[in-house]
Length: 146
Picture 1 (cartoon, helix red, strand yellow):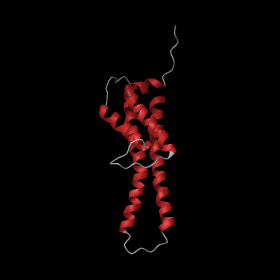
Picture 2: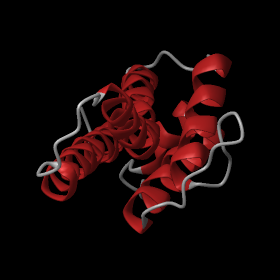
Picture 3: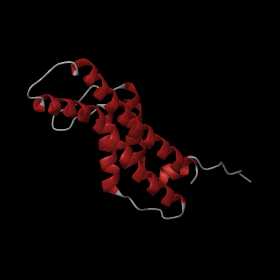
Picture 4: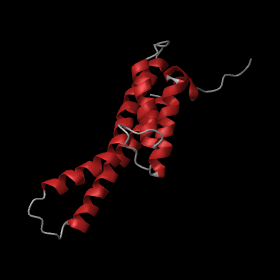
C-alpha cells in the first residue's frame, strides 16, 4: 500500500464513519425529543425515524463502500495491472459521490448536504472520473530528470 490507495481508504472510512455518526446522532436526538411521548401505535413514527436516518446516512455510507472498492483497483494499478477501465464501478462511485454531496438526488429526493459530506463526496466523484491509473500515479515520487 502506498499513499494513493491509503488516502482513498482514508476518504472512504471518513465517509463511512461520518455516516454512522450522523445516523447515531439522529437516533439519539429522536429519542431525546420524542422519547418522552407515549404513542400507542408507534410503527408509523418508527418508520419515519428510520427513513430520516437513511436519507441522511445512506449516501455517504454507500459512497464510502464504493471508494473502498476503488482503492482496491488503485492498489492493483500500482502493482502493474493497468488499462482496465472498471466503468461500472467508476460511474456508480461518481454518482454516489455526487448524491452524497447533494448535487443529484435519488428518485427526486435530495437532502441539503452537510459540508463535510459534500467535500468528501466531490472528492470521491473526482477520483472516480479521473480513474484508478491516474490516482495510482498521483502520489508517486518525482523522478530526477537526469
